[in-house]
Image (cartoon, rainbow, N blue to C red; front, top):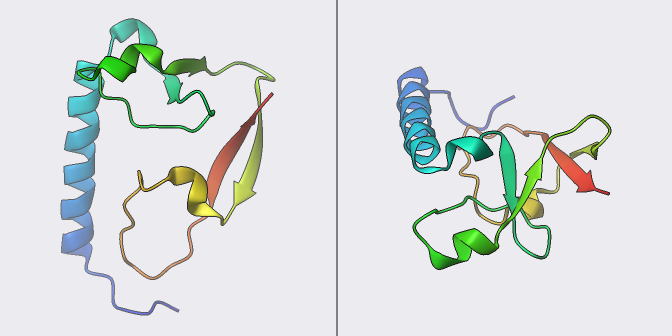
Length: 100
């Protein structure tokens, strides 16, 4: 049961905005790094900004077979404010990688 009604028009607006933001970010990132996850020294995932000096200090984690252990979690603290919720009142489960 949802706490509030779902507005499909608003959801579509949010989706289109998120896709536009993602495309803009992808166009600014180095093409040879497509598909990598950017991490701080503490292994915390971040949204990279290639215009900042710290960008070169971020660790790149490329996906690999048997390279990460996935866990389903409801604890969203690992997102560190990078995720914006849709406000639909539903519980969302995220996949979290534990790096070896």
